[in-house]
Image (cartoon, rainbow over all chains, first blue to last red; front, side, top):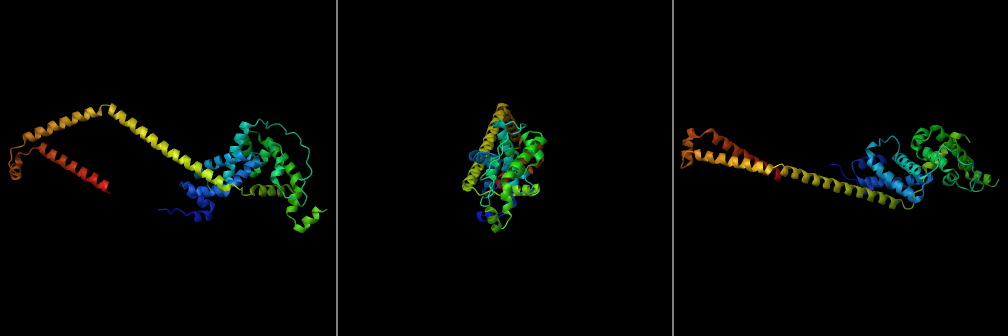
Length: 201
Length: 130
């Protein structure tokens, strides 16, 4: 007879072990997985553009769906990446239903922002802030492909949009993010003293 | 900066997400919803089973099985009575055994049926005890 793991052993167990337990109906093991990865999943949904309340709701739905389909998880990627994909697809479905954004249309050109976005050395790399400068469609496409782990083709399928359109939204979004974040990212790899001198000219 | 480097950095930034302050509450809500779902399922399966059982029992009763059972019982009773009436008058078991030649096939079949019934009762009782 299989021994039920104690809460302490659960906390130190590997994700795959917890997944195996959850697949046998152990809800406590699945609860530990939710504790570990809940923030990441909700964080992704917020980055995709969901408000905190919606991110919480869809995050819960995503984990419930994951529990239902847990036998399908083959351990090829991480559990977190798998749930993120489920959550991203749920959000896309909601977004398509609720928003009236024309995915095929080119987003309006936004004036490049200067100031906090063009980070000085003291500014931290703020992905969330940079994502807010993208149009909803660009933000969705970039988040799906980089946060949700979907390929361009999968994103196109989820959004029911031609592949080329998704690619162009991603490219445009990346260009905008690069222009806002590149200085910070370049500085992130430098020695702190070099960063200081770069910050002060 | 090379495109690939920037994309790798973006991947890294997306994979880094701070632990939200209400992570524990969120996990509790998910677990509660899971528990609620399981309770609902148990009730649903139990309710459907009960309803199915009642419908099945209704169908069996409606098909007149009790009447047929009554008729079969009456026939069996009549058979047993006629069998007993045909038994030779015996004052003791030894008389009965000595009159073995007169015991016909019906009595043998009845004895076998009673023995089978007794074995069946014994087995049922034994299974219950286990």
